[in-house]
Image (cartoon, one colour):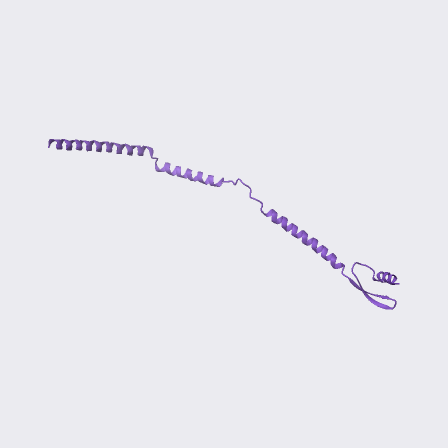
Length: 134
């Protein structure tokens, strides 16, 4: 039974030593925390500085690449389409001016209706044809 009492005494002594060491360590941590933690005014000043730096960093963002000019091919295609349309309309209007014109030609007492489409003379054509027939 003596050994049990000795064990209890040793355990109590170990527990007391542990408790003492734990309390010392706890006090040491609290003292270090009090020494290293800044006060409220310092914390507010640091927070304001960090906020201002964050605003400056987002305001200075500059894109490194230029935007691509994707409209250039479309503009070129539109110019070509307009050019082809203008040229086509001009040629069409010139073709409209060269429509055949009906003329009456009298040769040897007979009246003939003649269509000439390229500015030719109906009288000359009939005289030429008359000579060929003779």
